[in-house]
Length: 460
Ligand code: ARG
Image: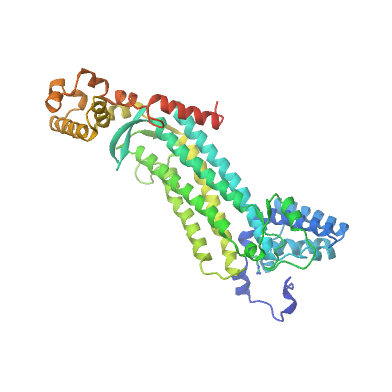
């Protein structure tokens, strides 16, 4: 067996079970790129500070570049007995270049190293997620552009409430996604501080320059407190919290579309390309991708809960428990990226059934609130007008008709304020036209919102 990099004080080697149980190489190899990046910056700093020679630095950097290439073309052999990504790369470097490699770990611990890698990894992951969020926003805005003027029932309590423009509704999801991206960018700014040089926990007496490595790696500055630097996982907690909120938003979008695709709603038809069938019922065409978007939100929340539970009760500073922070983060990111991608594809592959929606619109007295506003405009106090319209709706229910079907004299038996112009307020088309408040579903208000997003997302 090869001696461990930390093996000096040990007389016996670890059992196979302990080796298998404690390894992290099976998953933390995901960090290889950032580990190499960090090591190159560290070596350059050590050389600049006179802690290694320029020629040692150069052979380290060339060796690391070679290792990176061999990882990327699949030739690199990851060894469980070398425990984790840091020791795999360092040991491979030693195999390759010999003595100079032994200087690389000067003024560095795996504790600050792993966090440097992980913060760099999270930073890249955030950039990927933000790009996919924007891609989904573009898909939703494009879907809105294709469906100009389409009115759909708006719901509260899943009961018909008021008529809204479909565009308005789709843009509601776009707004949510914008805040989701904002949360990630806030998190990115807060996590972009460099732990490298914190060493095991106390820092070092060697003359390192933490500002140099921090700059080289694109961090804002080194972390102020070395103990905090190796203990902190709140940056991942914040990241996975932001992911969980995205997951909830996508799950709600999924639920909406699953409902809309049902026979009962029949608002949308997903194309075959985003549907799957049943192994027994030949007629079935199911919106599985959006069901799975809803379903996978559970994993993303689970990943956050795993990490919260992991951190609870840990004393300062580094504890090996913290090695368990990677898999939930990797899973959360992979899952969110998939959810965003598939949601965008779904959006690109649905058609709204205008006819069917149009036929369904008269049901549910969607214009009742607009009618109440009509009476307010005539000077009736709102509470009174609410009551008058309520009684008008009751009359419709007893006659099985719509508000617009009531004759003026019938309406006048309920309130003498009703006049011929009431019919300009009734029916969903008329009702939608009456909305005018900022952010409302009125045609112009929605057009303004749509213009905003078309310009912001640079859709042509
Ligand atoms: N694989 C470890 C982790 O992910 C690296 C840090 C190990 N540090 C230690 N002192 N054993 O947390």
